[in-house]
Amino acid sequence: MSLKPPSLWIEQRGRQHRVYWRTGVAGLPARSYLPFYGRAEAERFVGMAGLLGLDTARRVLDTEDPQIAAALLQAALAERGLAPADPAPPPAPDRLPLAPLGTPPAFAASADPRLTGVTFGTLWHTFLDRQHHVEEGTLADYTSYGIYHLLPFFGDTDIGLILRTRPLRAADVPAGAVYIEDGWLKEMRKKERRNNVGRPIAGTFLSHKFINNVLDVLGQCFDVALSERPPLLNDNPARGIRLPKHDRRDMHFLDDAAAYAALRAAMHGHFQVLLDFLVGTGARYGEAAGLMVRHLHLDAARPYVDIRLALKWRGKKWKLGRPKTRASIRRILLPSRLVEVLRPLVAGKGADDHVFTMVEGGPLHHGNFFNRYWKEAVKAAGAGVPKKIRIHDLRHTHASWLLSAGVAPLVVAARLGHSSATTTQNVYGHITVEANDQAIDIVDGRLPEVLARDDEGATVIQLTEAEQRLPVFEDIDDEDDVAA
Image (cartoon, rainbow, N blue to C red; front, side):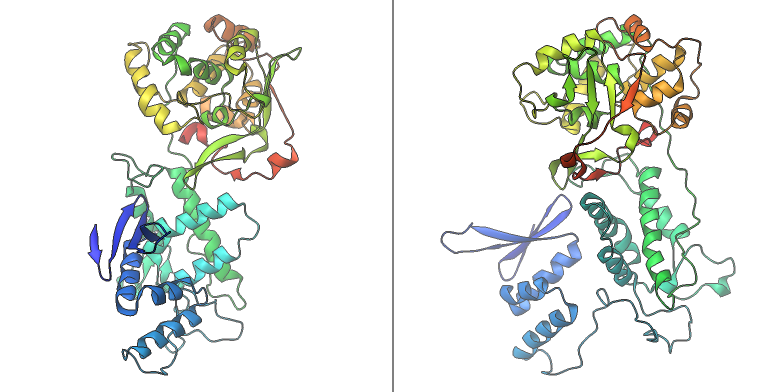
């Protein structure tokens, strides 16, 4: 923490750099703050407030039109004798619109014909402003990509100097050029993953799936420059770059009922039925976290569960959303033994209560569950349970048991919520398949305490109108089976 005049200071909270000040006004909180997503932005605001006063600095910051903001700043400086009264209005490069039709580029007189007069920051903000068709959560993801992964690298660079790869001949290298494949991509592959509050996780790296997502959005951003009339660029420097679609992580399976029984016995009693549900249905953790009592139909002639929603930590709060793929919204028949362990869990709960909660109540929290309970249970379970097994591996275990005993990939795909059996075969193709199509009997034999499914697999279901209005979770899809 560093003190800054006049009585302003900066504190880092997760991904934010907050500028704090003391209010000193009766009836108001003792202090207030403004959040920034970069140390440099926070420092600039503190400097402006120290020079011009807090109120003036906030007015400039709150003015969306860059030209009006520049005029306010100039007037404040002139009032204090720090600038001429009527200078030419300064440009605001990060917020200028793209060059209109027929307008020559700002750097047209330059010797380098690549220059367009449009910075990447300008192009990026224009791209975001045109995303009227995407879900709120998707737009939040795009904004985050820009703040943490794109603007820090490309920022004020003219888009004509952003190239895909470095030219082979040194004489062809333009001054000031930056490279996507030879520069930005290499940095991305070295970055550590971050937890929910923005802190780096030591020893981890961004997944190929995530980098591909950011790269795809970067390509969409450059498409805006190509769609201008006349086009600002001849081609899209972010297209045609190939990365492995997935960084296929090692999958760990529980070989038999004894291994699962050891893990279950070592788990805190509050979460044992959660494990039963995950390994018995093949559901994703987020789907189990988003499961409501009304989604369970335990008294039906053939009991079933509807997988409609998932729970995610978004914007520092829990949000319910619907999976991206249609196949993930599905109905799974439940065998009697799983029904028996679910009944006491939901007894007395309301229709909109969560089926699975933390010990102290409230929605399942992946990080807390993993760190407080899962790791301890795996450690105490004994040699039969792989020490690197993840929560998601219960889903893999469920699939492997069925496929290894001969269940048709089409049936397994339906129960897992895969878009096609091809996905299932790609993920679990190494598992030997034998002739047998009785899924419920297989799991009954291997897991006598908890059953997984019915031989009819799963069926796709319809969302209600209210559920249709929920945000789409882009990362609840087939890819999580190799990248989660």
